[in-house]
Image (cartoon, rainbow, N blue to C red; front, side, top):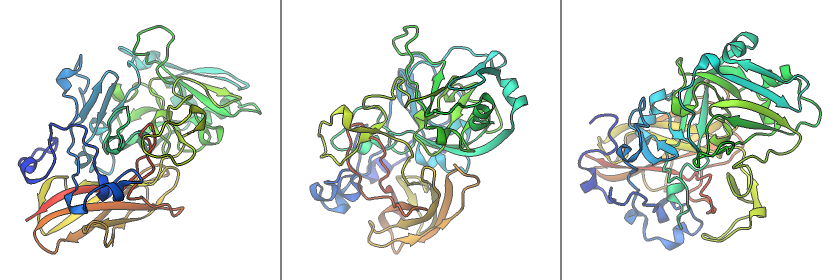
Length: 420
């Protein structure tokens, strides 16, 4: 079947689940994402893995997925589109398969030759650079860096929460070329007392009102000064895709994707934690204590999300397809600012685990590729589960605490196979 098809022919009949239920959120007992998962559900064998559905591109006001291949459009305003797991099989995510997450309206036609970036705030030497000046004045580096939306996996929360209903495909690891944010900040001369960066893009609020930015986030200074935070002007050896921030963006690997401001125009150094749009209230925050599913949590009890948790993804075989008795299972794993130390695979609903072969990251901030040859004992229905353990000993759970915004779902990944 074509690699960009969202569903395998015939699997709708062979497996439970329906395309007409685009927001099935029922990992339930088998891989439930709430703490009540193993209690509320029926037996493991009766559970359903949701099929991947979204909004047809025809419902959008324009062909927003031009230059993309096989993405599922979740929202046309603002544009959000995820990549089915089997289309993320490449070690380096092609530009055409990098997910899209916008908070507002992208700028119109842009000319990279006229684009400028201003660095100001708590610095000794405020400056404005063209992209050519960034190339000429700073070391240009290329790195494979992982970006993941903080809401990746939101579709599986029960009770359901608002926001884009990502399944597993709001993650990518492309090669980015640019200059280190740290080098630019050093040239500007960061003053004592600097606490946080503030990032500003050229996108506009959905309301269309002048001066209303849809999002402006930042990071603590120690994160901003790490060697793999880039101001990027190229992607996989070519220009950035328009929906991925062309012509200039930040790439902040390991932290939630909203830190990686697109259409970057300005970086301000601040003496306080940044308080721009979607930095305050409950945006990109989780409760600082466990809450019961469905609880209402006061705004003041939310903490800012920083690093993303340990996670793995099965990219081959494709979910919902037929497989032979012997097959190579493979995918990727990542964990914020850490490395992944192990990936395990189960084909018996977590009763036993098989250690996979795990590669190291090609550079700090890149995901790690893993693979394992699996022999199924007999024909029939199977689920392949993957879980990763990181360098600090954190391991993917079977279930996570529910939170009101649906962030940080790193529960064990599952795919279904019919072994012939």
